Image (cartoon, rainbow, N blue to C red):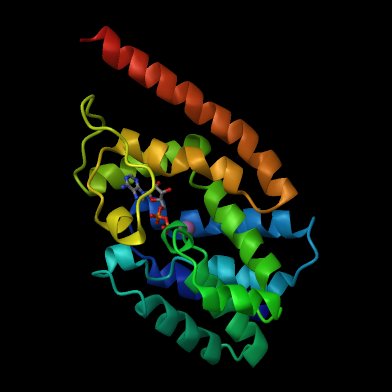
Length: 225
Ligand code: ADP
Ligand code: NI
């Protein structure tokens, strides 16, 4: 392992000490490994992919009073400390800013013109985003989602509360719906939003498992009523 990556692993482990279990070092480690494996089937810069995967949840605004700048500042300071070259730093920070599901709910014209001018690391962003999305679905996705719901003291399920599709970024952040609804509002949508061929393949089985889980959950719920 190169020293930049080794130092980043150490840094992220320290930063995420005591984090909520769905957004802790082990989540980051899974995303990192998945991203490296997806990157092998893509033409992209592996160093950028690894650094972005390792730093992508360094200070999630959900756990830092909504502060969206903090993660960028922490990541930037670390990248300066380990002396990565300026282009790699720009790319990694771009990926961290743009990969989250809520940010993808609203994309600006500026980003679209940047894409046309090829100034942005689109392939690398797509690889890390797929890896993060894969960890949000399947058995691990189910576990993370109920853990987060518990952390927020949300209901498991409420038969009269319908899922809210088409939420804006603000509505998504404020959402205090049930954990079962989170599957319909986000998790079941991810399979069709995968960017890479490898990501799409890996999403299939995980998606099917969530559908089986939801069917069984709702059957048991109905049987008890
Ligand atoms: P992003 O950072 O891409 O917007 P999130 O951090 O909101 O994505 O989601 C990461 C994971 O956190 C989800 O896959 C899910 O497991 C959990 N999570 C986020 N919001 C909720 C919610 N309202 N209810 C249950 N789990 C949630
Ligand atoms: Ni993540």
